[in-house]
Amino acid sequence: MATLQEACEYLDRALAEYSAARSTPAIETAILAMHASLELAFRTYLQESDRLPDDVWEALERPGGVSFPQLVDLMGDYTSVLGPDPRTRALLVSLNTTRAEIAHPVHKPPEEQIVNDAWRFAELITTLWPGLFPGIQVPYVTRVTMEMVHGGITRASPQVTPSPVHPPVSAEARRKPSRARQRPAIFLPLWRGEAKPTRWFLRLLGGLVTGVLATLAWRAAVSLAHWPPPMKTVSVVLVIAALGLAVWSTWLLWRVFRLLGVRRVLILLTVLYLSAVSVRVLTVKDERSLLHRILPQIQWVAGEAWGALANFTRSLVHAPATFKFAYTGRNPLISVPGVKVNSTPTAGEIIEPLVYTRLDELTPTAMPAPVPTSPSSKPEVSGEIQIGSHVQVSGTGGKTLRARSGPGTSYDVVTRFEEGAQLLVLEGPVEANGYAWWKVRGGEDEGWCADHWLRPIR
Image 1 (cartoon, one colour):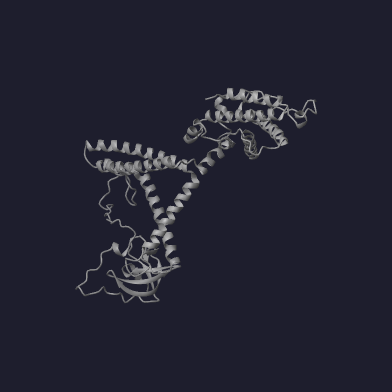
Image 2 (cartoon, rainbow, N blue to C red):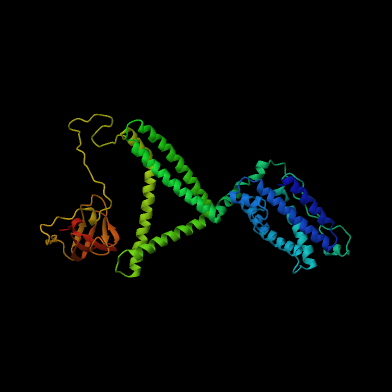
């Protein structure tokens, strides 16, 4: 691999060759030399950088792995050499086209275009010189004109005014662009990604597998923490293993995120979301129109995804306290009104514990159906609830009451009502699954609810 010093020498000789050219073939040769030297300088500069992804490193080391236009994009994304002007990239790509037409002549450019493009190439190299080779004097370049090629003018031609000589800069400082250029160099690759199908898929699979193993190790650790020694010691080892697997899984998934890019990740999540909604619409029994079936499923899938994310976050936050309780059998004292913390309550201060059963959000299937007196008997329908009257959600223990698209537990949940909500009775009753079902409305939402959690408002 060449060094920047060698690339600088090659580029200096190419500029000198251009300044001495006095014929069209000599100018064409100088263009090829300047292009090859500049490509070598770009490639060497990038290889000495420490901010490139692994895929870019491998492509740079592989012969022909990165073309000249791709080198220009990499220099613009990961360095500050090209500057903020986007026209610099376009000019480099245009000059690369001229070089290709000269090297592989099919439709060779006119002589005047070759002379003008050679000057633009030389002028651009002198502009990029301070960024590529800090501290090295910019060489003087004599512009070769059409008159000089045809021998019509012998006077001195205008010269490129060199940029001021910068003080010597260390290699570490040269590799790290200014902070103003670091932001697009960080976020643009994250948005675009550097995906390779095999690599990102294998890393995604590895991240998911290690995540599952971390979850299993954590559950085993919490379970063994309840046991006496030496099982408690084994639980500590499993906790350390779970943390290591979790870090490894996070690192692999982050690598997948960087390879795919934000754009592809958003597209992938959107496709998964729409697929889940489509499956729900096609499989859930609902006799309403297509539009009325799609909207509830969009809300349901979004709610389930948000609930899963919230539960995962809550589990991570409470993980240390969960393991501590399993290991020691003690939780921190809770401040109870009327009882002093870290004190023994007196007989008058003892509060009888209330035992609650933790249920999911209440559904008619969450409560036992009333036992009929005979096989042919039916549940008694409350006579106090009537169509047009108002009822209140009651007895859910603070949970929400699910309202379904039809009278029965086989119908899909279309909305939920908070405890204490006042509802208007629209239809009913319809007996199903051991309950009397009433169609109620609260605000803009309506659905069928069982009378077990509806109390008439007198």
